[in-house]
Length: 265
Ligand SMILES: [Zn+2]
Image 1 (cartoon, helix red, strand yellow):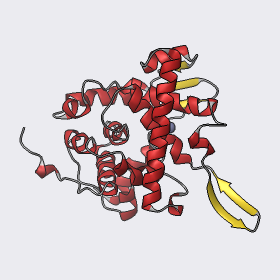
Image 2: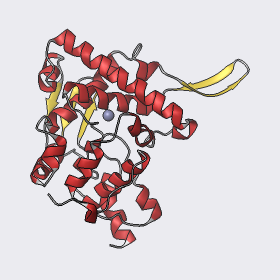
Image 3: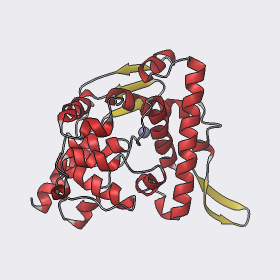
């Protein structure tokens, strides 16, 4: 595969699923080795909460302002925030199922095939004040991949892709509702100060990390929904998904496996 062809493949998903996908292989110009999807999810499902910190922050515009220790600390806090609000909303509404929860909260959820402007692949989105779109093209492609060896075992029967996406988007509504008090919005990073004058900024990625923890809690999953970043992309481009897999594994301090390292079933 040529460098140009690879760039072409990556382009539609450059804005990714739950945030910016910045495929670093594109910068290096080397196409990744394509792995079986089962290998990808098997490995990614073992990445711990703390180990997701560097990958999550790699999508943050202010990433360069943090040390690795801070990234881990903020990731923990954002995840705790997401879980706390999940339990709170479940308590208040008396249901855990994301579809029922969305209904109780008065959300308007629809399931169109693709976004109106189809220049990129998008899996779901929240539109203020209360609309959520779940795009079925990506969901269906993900469901087809359930049949691949090792996928169901890693992702478990507990996974319902639609509900996982819905839970994530629901958190964005929650965050909006509680914007004056929710930690992901009240946390500020001091960009600079000169005497009494200073400039503080919110940190965008905290809401994304919390949204992942929120939907993980609602869906009772034992792995991070960040796994879906690579999994759902696989339905469109195994090359791009393999690049993401390498990136996630490397950020987690793991060594990405090569296809020939697959253990015989
Ligand atoms: Zn999001």
